Length: 333
Image (cartoon, rainbow, N blue to C red; front, side, top):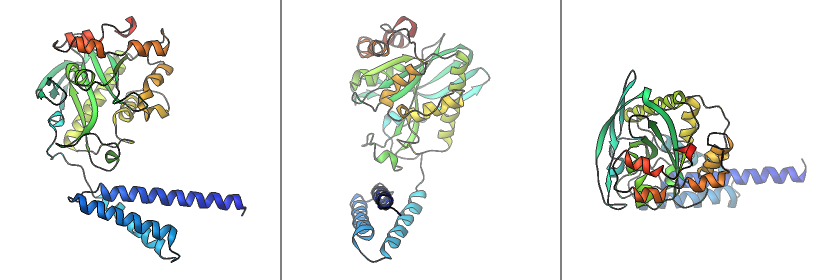
C-alpha cells in the first residue's frame, strides 16, 4: 500500500472518529435526562473518554469499549419519542386540523393573532372554510433572521374568492425556548405546520421581528397548487395524530416544501440551495418557477415587502394581503 493511500485511510478514520465523538457528545447533552448539569457532565465525560480511547491510549481494547458506549447512546437516543403534550409557547399551542369533503375544506386552528410587538400579542385561533375550485395559485415567502444563506421559507395558497392562506413549517418550542439550530437536530423540538392569515404569519416577521421578507409568485397551474394544498392538508392531519420531531437537515421548512412539491408532481433534482435556503430565490428563478421578465437581482429587490407590510400593519384581511403585493412586479401580483 502506498504511503499516500495509508495517509488517506488514516485521515478518513480520524474524521469518522471525530464525527462520532461530536454526534454522541451532543446526543448525550441534548438527551431526555431532566437535569442539565448531569447531561453536561455526562457529555463531557464521554468526550474525554472517547478522545483518550481513540487517540491517546495504546490499549487496543479501549476503542472497542468506546464504540460500545456509542452504540448504547444510539440505542438510548432511538427510544426518545416525540410528544404532543408539552407546555408549548402560545404561537404553537394549537395544532391545526383539516377536514376535506369533496371540493370543500374546513380548517381549524388557523392562527390570526393581534400583535402589538414581537412578544406582546393577543392569541386568536379561528376556522377557515375554503373551496378547492377557487384555489388559483401559490406564493412563496423567504424571511431572513439576518441576510445570508439561511432563512425561513413558507407558502401562501391563493384563492379568487377569499384571502390567501399561509402555511409555515416550524419547530414547536416550549415556553422559554426559541429556535436553536443545533438542538433542532437532536430531537429537541416537535414539528408543527402553522396555518394562519398573512397578517399574522407575514406581519409578525416583516413588522415586529424586523426580518427582511421577500414574496415571490410561483409559476404554477391551479391544478398543481391544489395538489400541493392537499398534500399539506394530509400532513397537517398526520402530525395532529402522530407527532414528529423537527430536524434542521431532514424535516424542516424548505426540505419539506420541496418534498411535497415532488409529491404534487414537481420534476427536478436536489439542489444545495434546498439546504442553504436563503439562496432559494435564485434556485426558483433559475428553474423557471419565477417570472424571468426581470433580471433576478431586480426581481428580488422589488419582492422585498417590509415597507408595504408596515403601511398595512393595522389593515384586516384581505386588505393586508392586497397591500403587501402592491409594489410587486405586475406579473407577480
